[in-house]
Amino acid sequence: MATTTDVPAEPPPRASSARHIPGETGLWIMLLGDMTVFAVLFLVYLQQRGRHPALFAASQSTLNGNLATVNTLVLLSSSVLVVLATRVVRTPQRHYAPRLLVGAIALGLAFVGIKAIEYHHLFAAGITSHMNSFFVYYFTLTGLHLAHLCAGLIVLAVLLTLSRMRELTTGQYKLFEGGACFWHMLDLLWLIIFPLVFLVR
Image (cartoon, rainbow, N blue to C red; front, side):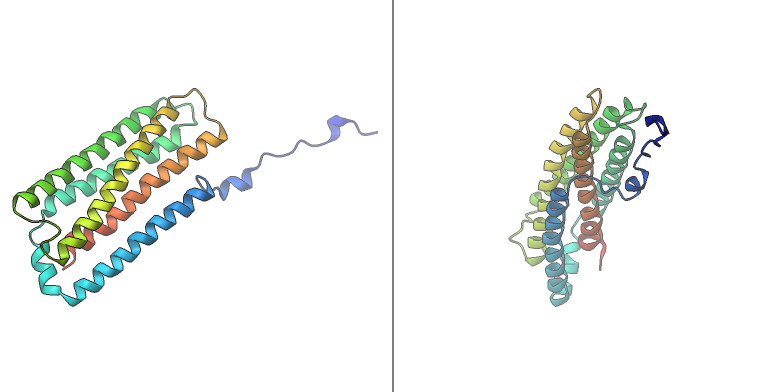
């Protein structure tokens, strides 16, 4: 007669982990909505550039490509730190997560500072969004991204708080992953804005 010890234990759910989608469904709806808005702006920008190539090229030449390049490297480095923090936050090496997130926040603030310098140079030269259609799109795209990035810094501050907790629940870890995905979306959007606005001739 079989006893309870004869019943095999239920195996751990390893198969589901291979298909794990970070964060919550609602988060991805929000991210896709944001990316759709930017995609429409990108398409309108390209359409207008095709109609006024000389104006857009001349206006683009007044931008500081070096500052934009530095900002690209800064944001990429910040994203790498967030990836590493997400990987270690539920491991024995979790004490590294707060340090990694502090570094990511510092780089995010550096991005804001560099963008402020870039804007200051343009304003000092009398260049605003009212100058021509190129600068309407330039300030719209970079300004909207900058606003999202400032919101992203608040998100990183929340992740920093979570990373200092002794242990994360499943819900808290999903929140952590979702916040990381939001920051990566900002990185992705900038990797489109940078060549589109600063490099494409």
